[in-house]
Image (cartoon, rainbow, N blue to C red; front, side, top):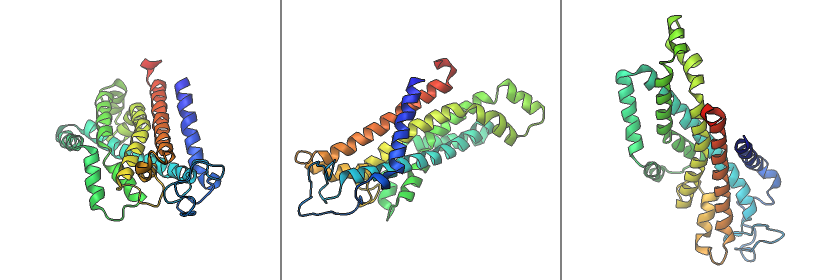
Length: 268
């Protein structure tokens, strides 16, 4: 339980910081303060984390970047888990030709590197917004979840309580909603928790490559890109954003492990 508490504490702190970012950020994250005197300024009392090459306050950009990263991570995972669970339920419960067709689609999706799909789609898509990015990440990340859901359904549908409900006249929808889905939720919840950190990492990579969150909106990935050529003269630009990404991914990993220990009786 200690790991779960630690994960909840870290994720809660990140969420609170993201929610109150407009209240605690000292400056507008997109405003160029003074290109003549504040370009690549070192950390100071007025700018605790320094400024970037466009004289924008880094602390403000990191705080607002947390809002975008967490929003993208949570919503994209919500989409991928919803789609993946639905496909896995249909495939596992129906069996036969439907199962074969859906799983071949999943196999094809897993066979193609996800980053390749994302780069191609985003490169062809003009005017990528945060909403579009969330949709693309969500609808390209459900393949693994569908396999987890299908495997759990194949096991659950042979259990005694499902056979008893079927003998009492329960239809397919009732069997799935009342008896199967609640009993396969644990591994899906764990996958979703771990998936948030992975999506945040992917989004940061895409923004670093210039096909993610469009500037001047702050994203941890494009903050790193802004400071990549200044790593020797102004290391605070890339370093602070990199540490924020590491902390966030580690926090969600710890939370995911804690949830797995809580929901898996073999871990107790």
